[in-house]
Length: 111
Image (cartoon, rainbow, N blue to C red):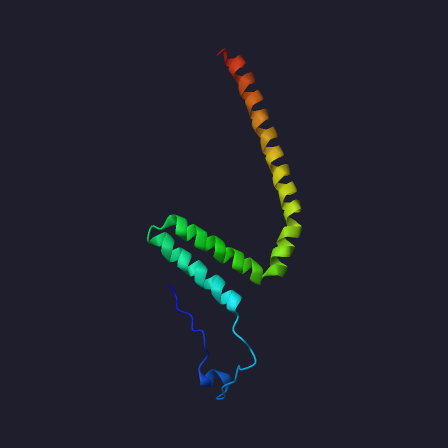
């Protein structure tokens, strides 16, 4: 597991520290990340229901954080579903053709 530093040292900023008094922390992102991490810990310790509920709340918070991305995915979803339906239809046709060929082969072999 890798550890990622959340702050940069003073020498990474060219020796000067920038004051972030005007920027408030991203509480929604922090809450989403914390609940997803907590859900992983709960799942690892065997608390399945609590872990799933916490993961669901973390995912909902993450979706609130990324509204534009969720909106784009929601808009693209009908196209993906149509493509999946087309693939399933093709697979159904292939399975039906294989079934017909198998019946022909059984008749030809006399079984």
